[in-house]
Image (cartoon, rainbow, N blue to C red; front, side, top):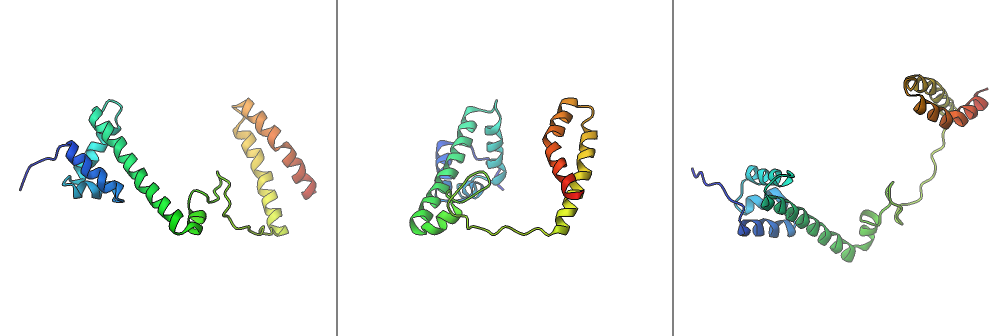
Length: 160
């Protein structure tokens, strides 16, 4: 059994990066280049440390860049070959943080009166608990009281 431990040479790095750019997972790319997974992960760990050797830090950055290039290539292909899929699932899709143009309109889910009553009771019971928990923090307690004051008033009107 060989005790040869691969070294991070330009040749090894270039081979791994080429495989990653082609769409391979980094650990698989490393193994294809003759670097055991454990050794590859050690290199990445060394590169992630602020005081790590510059060669390993540059290697980590290059791996991340190669992954981004592979993904970008796939996204560009999807946009070219299947634009509707790209719009539904790609960068143009609707997310909570980003308004997109692909989300289908959804009907509002009606809430029954019973559900509303349960919800009102739960909120009404929760607010005093929160206010009590915030007693050691007078500024936070005052902010919460100010924020939920109108809500409590609405709850009292709808219940009573």
